[in-house]
Image (cartoon, rainbow, N blue to C red; front, side, top):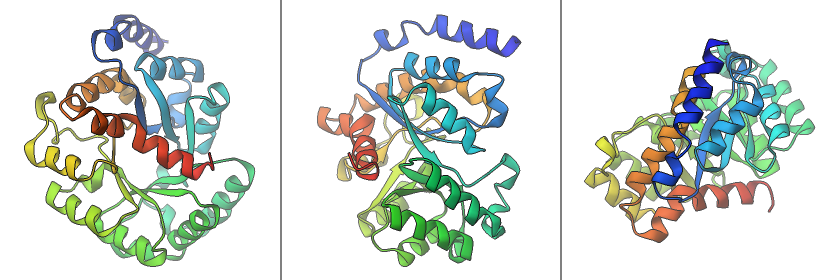
Length: 273
């Protein structure tokens, strides 16, 4: 109850956040609504947070997927469902070696509609293990994207398995801009989200190498908050405000791409819209 009260205060204090800043829509490409958040922040309250932030769409994946489905049922106009393979948070490091994950993912894909599979954590040669190969095959068969929290090596391996895959690189791999540049130049169907990092815009001002990188690849970047724990939901409204601040430094067409159009295009392709 105490946390719910805090969230209520957060919403009240942030009531004019969007109005005080630019009104540019945001598509948040990296949101989780996992099992330890449901009781703290019930679906209607979570949707209020997203709408308060001025979020136009949110790519949501959860541990377990039940969280994503609850949000989607509450606001199908807002939620873009993405299937996380984890049935619970503890599977983050074990899932890629657990054959039962394959049947779980396949059953979910048959039961529901998804724009992508992920966010999953896989690094290096683990991307070539049978479970990960199955996810790549599922995405290919259904023409949906993969949201990979991975190093560059794992991303390379995914593209070797399916050269036509569409991959959203979570956190831009937490990599340096020169390495991100090399990956984007090499892989035309690779997008990068900027979730859970602010080195690209310290203090809300775009870092010069990152700004040039975004200008050179205006169709490939997306913003995201990342809410792996209940506490991270406190930052959704503030993060949208932060995003609008540095995005405003870009030319208007590029700013709109990064804020919402790139994510909208990827979701529309995956959902056949």
